[in-house]
Image (cartoon, rainbow, N blue to C red; front, top):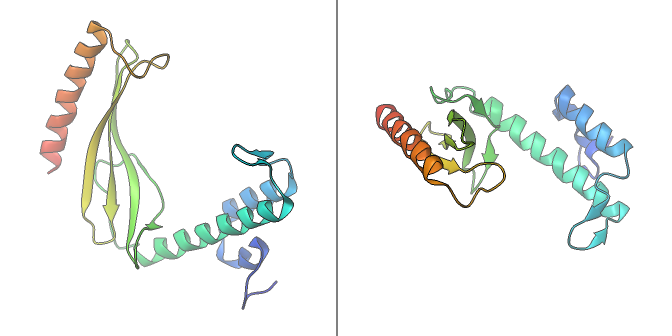
Amino acid sequence: MNTTNPTTWHDLRDQLTPDQIEYLESWDANPDIPVMSPVHGPVLEEHRRGSLYFAAKKFVETNAATGRFAHVPMPPDARVVDGWHLFGDDEFDRHFDGTTRRDNTGVRVYISGRQYQDGRVERVITVTGPPDNDDVLTAAEARAAARMLLEAADELDKLG
């Protein structure tokens, strides 16, 4: 293992969680993942190895940030929180999912957002249509979406 100048994902193994190691080992053991690049066709072995190394580096970055920002509490409305990600010069954020509203028409309205290393939170509301047609809504679906959007907007107002 080369710890001074890492060149493969194995060199970063001591900085990874057991789940991350299992994921990378599974990927590494199966040369058919990914089978093809959608743009360039078959993936060369060197590119696959590079992708494994890149994934491991991202895991290490997230792990380090998780420790560094352990004092930042999750947003109170967060149901699922991703790991911290570097997005600028030593600036980190993490994505989270909040409340989801659904009804029998297939319309879904959900709150999600970004939390920054200083604890600031930005939230947005997203609406999606029925699974078979995300771009258009019938009158009934639009009414359902409107009801759920108003509820989500009220929730955002209460969260501040």
